[in-house]
Image 1: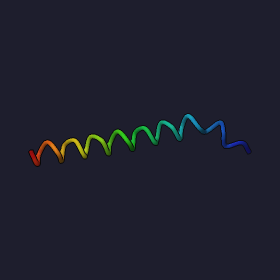
Image 2 (image 1 turned 60 degrees about the vertical axis):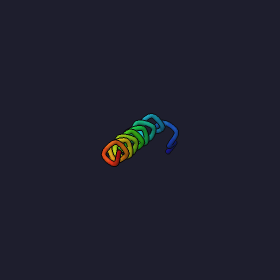
Image 3 (image 1 turned 135 degrees about the horizontal axis):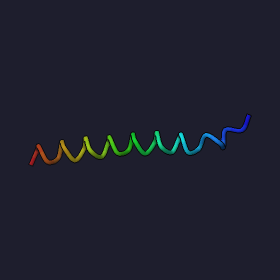
Image 4 (image 1 turned 90 degrees about the vertical axis):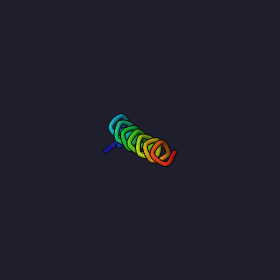
Amino acid sequence: MSKRKRTPTVWAFTAALIAAWVAFILTAVLHHN
């Protein structure tokens, strides 16, 4: 079993997590200002 073929899926999941975190932080900062 080669897990290298799942890299795109892992990348998409990681990208989604990062995007959610960035959106959450930006929203919090904007609301604090």
